[in-house]
Each structure stands twice: as C-alpha cells, then as structure tokens.
Length: 311
Image 1 (cartoon, rainbow, N blue to C red):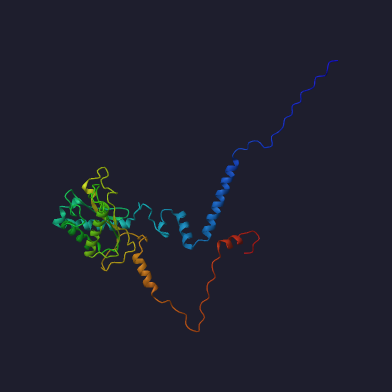
Image 2 (cartoon, rainbow, N blue to C red):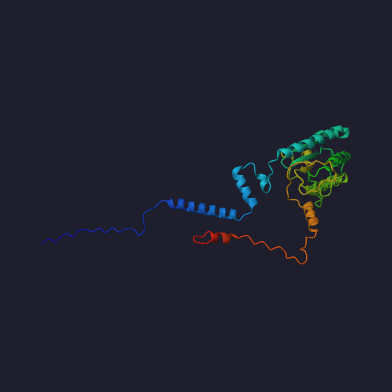
C-alpha cells in the first residue's frame, strides 16, 4: 500500500509588537510641553509685581506704545530714538554749526568738523588732515585750532545735563618702532587731552562718563586704513543725563529722552545723601506698627489651587 502523503502545515506567528503607529504621539507631546510652558508663565506672572503685570498687559494691548512702562526702550544696538530727543539734538546741532561759522578761525575747518545725530545722541567728530589740524602730528598735544574748537564746545556743552563720551581714533599707520607706545596709547591720550580741555572750559567732571581709545579698530574710511580722516576725536552728547549731575547753570536745557541708568556715579552720590538722613524713630512709650504679613509664595499658591483645598 502506498503511504499517505502528510499535509503541509504552515504556522504563522504574530509579532510581539503592534504595527507602526505613525508620529501622532509627537504632536500630542508637543501640545503637552506647550501647555506646561504656558502654565509656568502664568504662575510666574501671578507671583510678579503689579508693575510687571501692567507692563505685560500693556504690551499685548499695544506692543508699540508701552515700551517705557517698565525698564527702558533702548535696545542693544540703540537703533531707536524718540522724536523729542531728535528735535532737541537738532537744535543743539544747528546752534553749534552757527557758532563755528561765526568764528573766522574755525570757519575754514568746517569740512573737518562733522556733527551728526545718531540713535545714541549727538556725535561731534574732529577729523584730521594729512598735516594735522587739531593735534600735532604723532602727538597728543592740541594745536591752536584744536584748543579754540574744544573751548567753544566746552562753553556750550557745560550748560547741558547730558553725559558725554569721548573717543580717540587713529589710522593704521604704526606710531613708531618703539613697542612701548603705540596707536592704542596715542588714541587714548588724545581723547584724554580733549577731556582736559573741555573740563578746563567748564564741563563738569562727572559729566564725562567715559573716555575711550580705539586705535585703528573702527576706521572711518574702511577701504583706506591710512586715510588721514581716520585720525579723529569723537565727542558723543548722549541722549539723557546717564547719571550725570544737573548743571549749575539755571538756563541749561535738558536734551534727549530718558537716560540710561548704566552709569551710576551721580546716582550713587544722591543715594548716599539720602541715606545720611536719619530715619524717623518711634516715639517712646508707643508701640511700633505691626509688621505686615509676608505675601504668599509660589508654593502656597500652587497648594491652594489643588482640588479640594480650602481657600
């Protein structure tokens, strides 16, 4: 007899993992993270001061109109300037240009005196020529023209409460073979000699907040590092007082908008004067006022938000 043919049995086993389920979980996870971030922002706002809350609410109501409600409207590069500050700086620019033209000795140097309005304030630049106009060649000693111009500027700037910043620049020509004195020292010394001349003519010592020497790092004519106009002194009349004390002259006009609080020389002096006033002591025999209860912290607010928590 012929043996019976055995049937072929095929066993299919299913895998232990489910089929591919796509990337829907990523969307859900992103929504969860976004919700958590929003929750913590709300919790941070709840614990912030009223001033911060008003500033945030004001920003969303009018993003362009509430920048001065908190902090400062100045950005890192300072690319904005208020209309009021620009108007006042324009008046100061016109006045200086008229006074320079009125002096015959300085009128011929008008092309080497540039006055421009920038986002930081009014910038006055004294540009050298190949023979040296405001400084003796290779020296930090002022020439006669430089002394006359700085005297004129000092007489006008001393009436302002605005802070001043003085910068010295050179061209790329090496100063000398002596490595102990370079364009760095020359640019700083020229800026300092300008400061001394301005203060000699009435500019207050606390009005000049910074004196800088840049050597040839910020060329005016970048495609020609050896151009004589790269050698210059720049005086910046900054927007606002920047911590400078008010001028002694009663008719001095405040130029610019709100000052930047980065410079704290005069401000610290005022703080010391205020702290010198003794605090009022409670009268003898009378109990002092009760200490106000501290505001609840963030953890207390979170606990009170839990379900079933008595508020």
